[in-house]
Image (cartoon, rainbow, N blue to C red; front, side, top):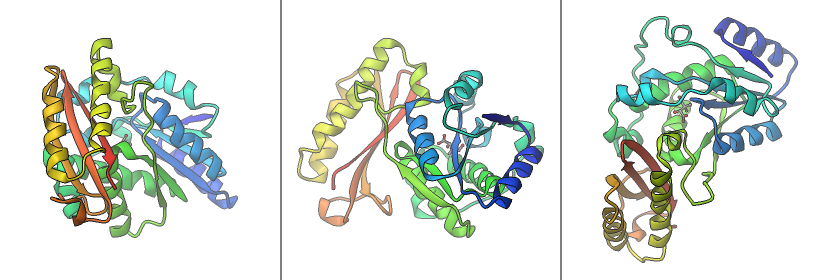
Length: 276
Ligand code: PAF
């Protein structure tokens, strides 16, 4: 696997691959790779002739500077981990990607106005900025994203629609730790005790699937989360799986999901679950 650091080299290689008529899969990441990322990369490997993985901690999608500074960076290990499955790792510097501060402004509509969009102003614009650039540079047939960031996928689908980008967006299921915790690069910042306690987020969501209607589920999840002094609930929303707008009854939408964000100590974790 070759590590590419510049857009010029990336463009040259993409042009070469395209001229050979080969299909391209792209897995955009911010590094600190784990088995969740590997599942996307392995799927990209199966479905494409050439696989690119981008590794770039995108500063413009962080609305919290402390989170950006503390975001784990493990490039050497990442490169080793994916060597077997990817053909190219694109790992540019911030100056390479943003020689001047980006000025693009996207408006993704209702899907970005709720949950993560409401809690993290500017976050999805920053995601749009980097994903648009990566899709323009790599021109993949397929790009792979994990469903832990379910709302991000809805935003990226809207980006692709608005910008008439031809790449197919492929959502991939959440990969979990043996204790049920959704895999996330941020899990590395948890102490061993917090890591074990954080598993209760998924347990509570799974138990809530036994309940019948929305108010019951909401009350149950909020009360259960409140039992753990280490947890601070940011939000728990029950929403239409397509529009991401809040539902008040299971009858309100064809697909209904629960979306949760919990601080475990200082670490902000997100997860989701499908009810129907
Ligand atoms: O999901 C992520 O890791 C990031 O938001 C992404 C899609 C790589 C853009 O920086």
